[in-house]
Every structure is written in structure tokens, then in C-alpha cells.
Length: 217
Image 1: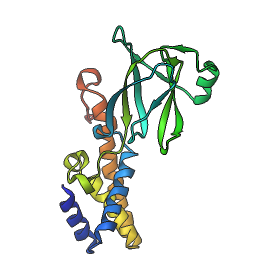
Image 2: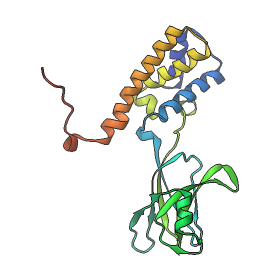
Image 3: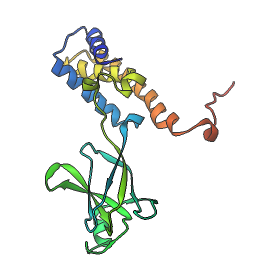
Image 4: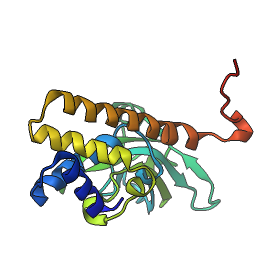
């Protein structure tokens, strides 16, 4: 289901034609609800960067939402060290002197950058003693179907996107309570199936976990 097909389906289900700006709001709101409820492959992104010697801060990507993992790569051996996530207070107390340097072991989300309050920064502990390459795996919102035409979600499991958008659209219309409940029920059913895929099947295999078996009675 591409963008045009989704718009046509929502208009057909609701028997209403919405302004494009409103339809796009319905879709993007549904997408964000879905993306915050289940971890699917398209939500993962990785980026490489580098620290600066004697600088305890590391800039976050502009589309960063949360961390899956952050690793520092030894400049001599190339070995990966995955940093442990801590609170800023822990790092401040463990390494009270920013001039105390070493190989980074910990990181925390420090807060908005001084030059851009909408973007975040990592603080490292201890302060890097050299230039370390870094590899960050993180959660972000993938491009919306509103601008991408097709997405992983629309290509692989579009029912949840359709019913999520219908809930937003019918709520906007102040539709009948029973129909909103129907669409919401369909959305939750589809979400449960998507969670089975993203949070279940994609995190195991038959070799380690065995195949799904239905009890025989």
C-alpha cells in the first residue's frame, strides 16, 4: 500500500474527502503511535563518528530519539568497547575532573546542545584521552509515507497503518462511538500481530527457540 492507496482507502472507509494537510496529520500521528509501540527493523539506524581528545562531549545525530548501543573503537587495536549507559550525575561524581582522561567506559544523555536546544549531546566518562571512532545504533523515526510514498511498514504490514490512520480520521470527524471503537479494535488487533513480528519472531529463530507449536487435543 503506497501513499495514494492509503489516502483512497481512508476516504472510502469514512466516506469523506479530507484536505491533504489534515490527511497527512492523521497518517503521521498514526505512524508515531505505531513506532513507539513496537520495535521493527526500520526503526534502527547506525552511524559512525569520533570523539575529540580532551573533550567529554559527543554530538548526537539530528534524528536521534534513543540509544540501542554506543561503542568506542580503540584507535590502536580496533577493538570495540560498548559503553555503559549511566545518569549524568554518575559520570560527574565518578569523574569530577574533566581533565582526568582515559578510554571511555560510560555515557549519558547530557541534554540540549548549547548551539541548538532541539538537539541532544552525549557526555562520556572518563573524558577521552585520544580520538576514538564510535559506532552508535539508535532509534529514530523513519521517513513518513507522506513523503516517501512507500515505507517498510506500508510494504510489509499495512493493516496497522490503515486502521491507525482511520482512528485518527474518524476521531477528527467526531464519528459515532461504535465505529471509533470498531476501528480502534481493529488497530489494536493489527498492532498485536505487528508486535508478534517485531518484538517476537524477529528476535528469535527455530534453531535456538524451536518452531511455534499448537497443542494437540
